Length: 286
Image (cartoon, rainbow, N blue to C red; front, side, top):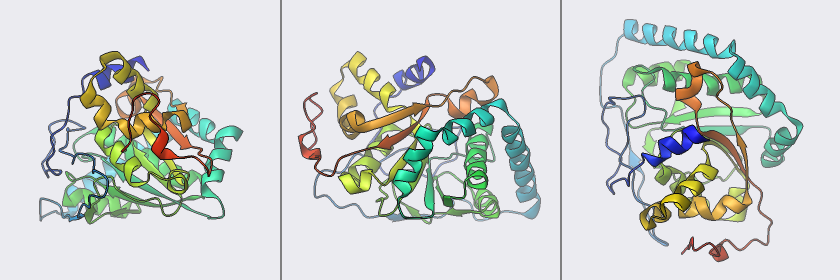
């Protein structure tokens, strides 16, 4: 958790513009997310295409080779064996099945993956998603979006069995069916967008979230006591009391950059829960 807190301490408020399609200088470039919607406000989803229009078979082949090496490296690692063991723990497996309900598959939505061509952490994150699908028959289609991915990366993602979204949802995917959101190291605003659009008992109970620790976000806000931080995380903070969080251990330096500070989150809300009253910690939800 200390590592997660250190990263979160460095976060700064993000501007209000839409995501900008730019190529990264680091594995996880800070993106320009929209601010959270106010009640009743509608936001038009934006069609998206890669910024580049050319690719070639050699470049695609080299990237696919990188991905295959990365998948094999992760699959043979102690980290992955521990990760699988955690998912197969009876208590945690029961939570997955509870979210799944009568459905046989749970779609996986990956936001903010970054450039798999330029950096290893995004390749490791994608490798983990691919291996999860291979190991659990209830993991359904993998849908991927990041505004910085290239046409070459789109081609390789498709070859790996993923579907690249053509719409920038800005994190606002409604969980109309059981959905696993795979979002390690995304900005807080993106999590809050996701929670806001699903701010209802039925929808929240259809979500499994793999991403930054909500406990760390709460700690971060309590330490800095900044109103801007509270505003950009208000749904995260409000839902914390109903969140069952399982911290993912990154005990290997090889996988620390890709997965440090990550947790599984499940939301177990009773049907009678009134989400409009969650303000006793001054985290006001309008």
